[in-house]
Each structure stands twice: as C-alpha cells, then as structure tokens.
Length: 231
Image: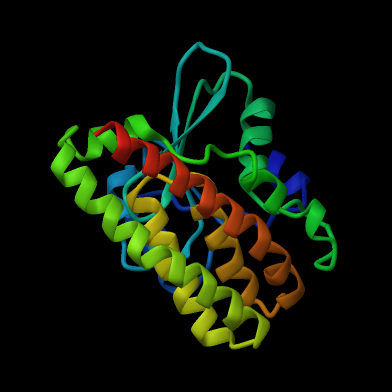
C-alpha cells in the first residue's frame, strides 16, 4: 500500500511501532495517519499533536470488500477501513480523505472541499449513543452548541476576510472541536480544511470554504433543532 500511495505522488513515512509514530508526530504534520495491528489506534488518539494531524484511520483485516466508515472521538474525525484484500481499493479510500495530489491551490473545486461535502451532515445515532440517550444532557449540549457556534462561524468569516491568519486558525480549530462534539462530520471536516489552508497561506482556498462551512453548520443546526423539538 505504501508503494501505491507513493505512486500517487504522496510523501509517505513508515513507523514500525507506536513509539516511532509518536516521535514522528512531534516533528512533522501528517494529513493522514494509518494504524494497523502494529500501531494501536488508542496509542495515538490522545497524542498531544493528534488534533493537528488530519485524519486518523484504523485498518481492520477481513474478507469483505474494502469499505470506509466515519466515526468521531469527540475531538476529531476518524475513519475505519475494513477489508484489506484489495489494496488498490483501500488506497482509493485513503485517497478520498486526502487533498488530491498535483491540484493547483487556486482551484478549490478540485480540492478536498468536494470530499468534505460528501460527508454526513450529522450522525444522530453516534450523538445519542455518546450522550447515553439522555434527553437532558443532549438538550444542554445542543443549547450550548447553538449559543456558541453561530457567532463563532460568523466571526471566522470576518477573520478570514481580514486575513488574520493566527486568529482564524485558532477559531477554526475551536469550531472543529465543537462540530466533533455533536458529530457534525461535514462542518468539522471543512473547519479542519480551513484551518490547514490558512496556516499554509492558501487564503484563496480558505475563503472558498467559508460558504460551504456556513451551509454545513446551518444544516447541522437544523438537525439538532429538530432533535430538541422531538425531545
């Protein structure tokens, strides 16, 4: 699989165990971290550099056709790929989680934003499960989310327009955590992309992500609002 990714022009680093992977996280940013049997996902999930490191992917061997499943640990989006018999297919799935190689920075329509827009708006089953289906707890979390997130999304747009890179990165990072807390996958992925784009100086792409981020946040708000009405 390393050879397949390198063949698609990705820069791949290989760690033989969790300790070596942890050392690499101290000195390098990774858009995607893949964990197999030799590197337990739990060893990296709470690594202090993990929130800055993009996707965390766990591989499970099975006889099934490779399939991608998203999940959240409350702070960042994770993915699970089950079925490793077809490595070409596995590589295709990993490719979906990464910025397409060789695409120009000025062409946001062909960047990973299009992948993020294919993610679910919000996973209600995951949210209910995380809250143990406790209506009071869910109501408290949703009201807090709605109170803070609307203003933060609006403020983020203003910071991007003013080209205030440090402040925009901080707020995008905060929003990423807020979206993750309610399993709003699409908005969370877009917030992560925007943070990465601002930090890299790709202000054009960051600006292009504002509209879909606002739309995805609004869609998640609608779903959560409906859950409040039912509760």
